[in-house]
Length: 112
Length: 111
Image 1: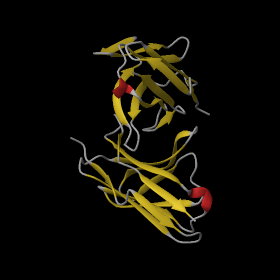
Image 2: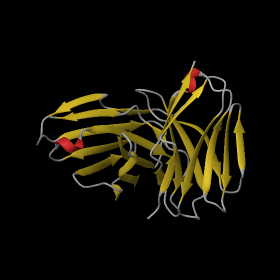
Image 3: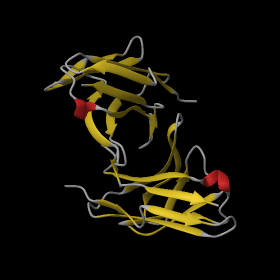
């Protein structure tokens, strides 16, 4: 069945450094890839998404890249700040459905 | 702004009790979802509804049922709660295949 693998499970970076989180999906027909940020005790919130007809998308300090051939996509956060500390989830759409399959999450800690 | 609310933030129940979790959205979204979130396992889909009275099993439906009598409201029912159902439950809504918006979550403890 469909599967999304997310790495690493935890990531610690110094404030100001960059952070990269990677996800691999199994179904080559997946066409929508959202990223969610979940702060402690709060709901997951969409921070950026990308569709399969685009290779890269950027929004200020956050960017997502998609490699359809390799079936992987990555979240890049530059100039990290303490408020970036959270759990980040990637997801891939399940073709022919309205559903997603989620990765297992990455806990990012930005050290001041 | 999309508003998705859940009936309780925290809930403590005893084994064998019937538990109702309710989700309400105000955006006229057709699709509503119930997920369970456990450490190291991410978000796993329990049930999905694509219209009133329509439902579809997700990846882990055992021990759960759902009800959608009105478009804005999607209920998750634990017929007989068990300790292994202690978890965070998240509701989400979406318009078609677009972005899913999450509720604040209900942390359920079954004793």
